[in-house]
Figure 1 (cartoon, rainbow, N blue to C red):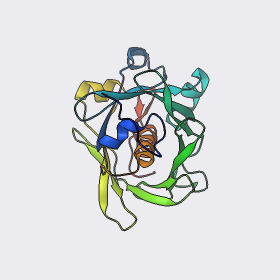
Figure 2 (figure 1 turned 90 degrees about the horizontal axis):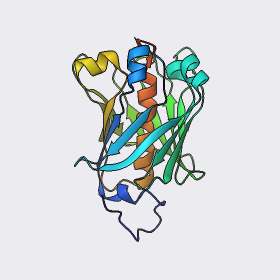
Figure 3 (figure 1 turned 135 degrees about the horizontal axis):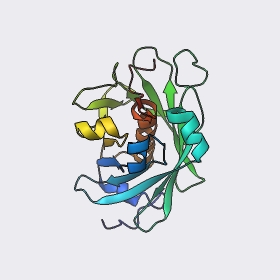
Figure 4 (figure 1 turned 180 degrees about the vertical axis):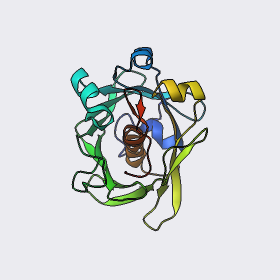
Length: 233
């Protein structure tokens, strides 16, 4: 995919995002993890609607944290362009995902370029269905994400709606069904992200970060145990 140039006020490396309204995020199947249950660093390819690779993402974590903390683990996610330049950096701190501890909710910070914070995703306290706030670089809420009551779906997609501050649906993050064998034996997930074409590229990048957070919270496995669950419970 060619790189648009000469775009003012656009962080370097995010030029791709100015021309698209969808992203497809596909996790790489890790054979060691599938057959042994030994947790490895996640890797993702990020493509546009035509199937052209836009970015790829690699989790940066140590072996002990991955296998002791499981899906609740802190991590750094490094997003690279096709020239192997890190253009987006995401950091998820260690936090509790239970609704019984609303003071320790999940979040992920997004920087582009690395070191320059452009936004944050913060989990909102909720008992029934998951919800998140999308904040810009100065801490203002610009979007919200509303999830379903149950994040487990047999042979179907699971959708998290992206809504404006007035409650209007403007996009979605969809965990897409990827086949019985893949769903049962691996935690390699497949997501689709849609958003307005004219959305600030920084917020498009933050929605990508929201996808990684949602994946870790609701669709990762610990050993051979799924973490799919209703809401935050």
